[in-house]
Length: 119
Image 1 (cartoon, rainbow, N blue to C red):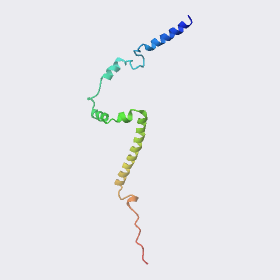
Image 2: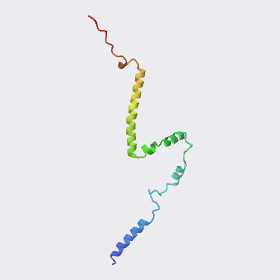
Image 3: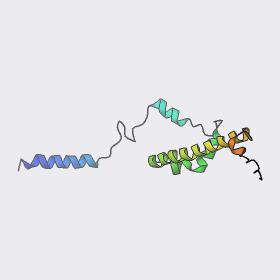
Image 4: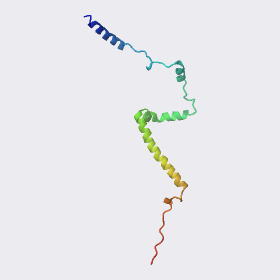
């Protein structure tokens, strides 16, 4: 019987240790920041910032919650947005180039065949 006692005791101790609430420790969610960081976090810029109107408008769109919060959706948004953005960027400059060089480009001056000679 004395041989089984330490095994039973260690099992009971492990169960009790698991049952006791953890109050926090380094890196745990309950581990609080140093005082200067807590003071820093209490200083909210809402309503004071010159771009407050932009932040409120951006938060109202819900883009962050839908596209930017999850890594796969973020990467998909960046790749697809880059492809669409690049396409329209290129088309815009093509139109500007066309407008500036109106009448000087080959496409604007089609070849006109000379009239056929009637013999």
